[in-house]
Amino acid sequence: MYAQKEKTKDSGSYYKATAQFKPCSKKNVIQRLDLSKVDRSKLNFNAQSAFDLLDNNRANFKKVDKSGGDVNAVQDSEKRVTSAYKVISNVKGGRSPALQSTIGWLGNLEAENINAGHNGGHLIADSLGGSGTWQNMVPQDGPENKWGDWRKYERENKKAMEATGDPLIVRVQLGYTGDSVLPTSWKSQIEDKNGKDVSSYSA
Image (cartoon, rainbow, N blue to C red; front, side):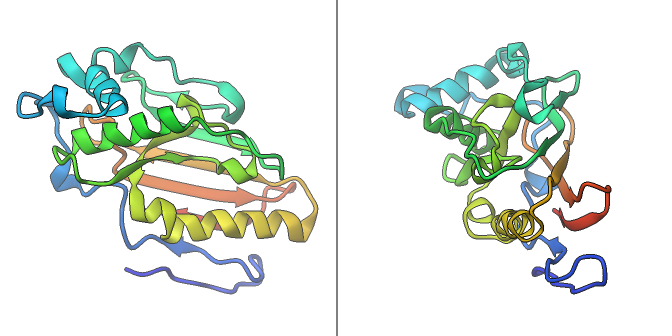
């Protein structure tokens, strides 16, 4: 389904987006990760880092604390971020290209496809003050992150902030299947200072 743009009394010129491309199709989710078919020596440095995090049933991934941070992240028992929120701003949060690449590779390896093209996707955009940290990034489909409805939604958040001049809060919720670190559901909404929904995203 392509993005559904709606102009409502509450949302003004902003729109609710339903993503065409989900973060991961359930048929590709791996319950028990098998890396035996991947030649680690042929991977680049960031991909090798992801491999090491996922090896031995994601043992090292589970050692990384992903709670709190500037986005108030909440993690589950598998150390996967399940929700985050932040009052957004025009001050960029700062990027970490190496970590972003490694997190994208987590998605490729989970999907058993090194050419899957996942990115380390920000839950709260860098342009809205979201940091380039474990608390604020998860594997996300590359085209959706760069050009899809998620990217459009991030731009709408910035427009809403600039239009109102008031503090706005972005909230994100993620869902997973089994013990995979690749999200299978992704929801976000932006609220004004009174808690009114300005726009939302669901994939």
